[in-house]
Image (tube, rainbow, N blue to C red; front, side):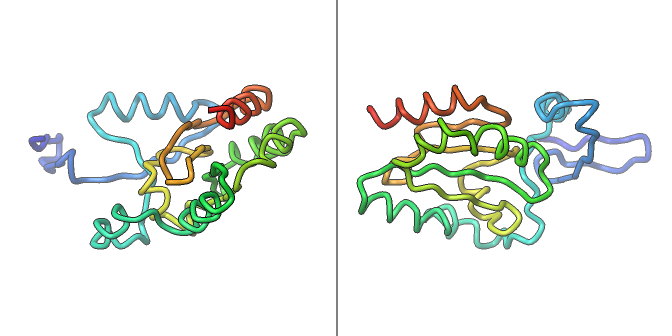
Length: 170
């Protein structure tokens, strides 16, 4: 994509430059932020400041930890993997945990899964590998690590428990 000249004659290369946006979650949603970012020609994604971008080829070749261990366990047990991508600072993640993930119906359905919680700040390579751009992100993976289901943002306990139960029937 060609550079864009700003009023101060600073060239911005949209496919190379990155920026961080802080916003007031009480005034706008993450989805609204994504729409605004995309309308400007950018691609929203998780900031990975501490991740060594030179090792990206290695990361994309093999499922990174801690998800790889979960996939291996799931394969041995004949189960699917439930992955919860979160961050300690993510208020939406805390709400999802309290309202949805800790509900009786979801906990009951999760008994048949290998459950992995992935802190995206501690394991940014896992977030990059699975294309996580917003949190909370929930995934259901088969025992080969193939994605079967993805949910970004809030989801009701009723809907999630139905998805979990339906995925076991497949």
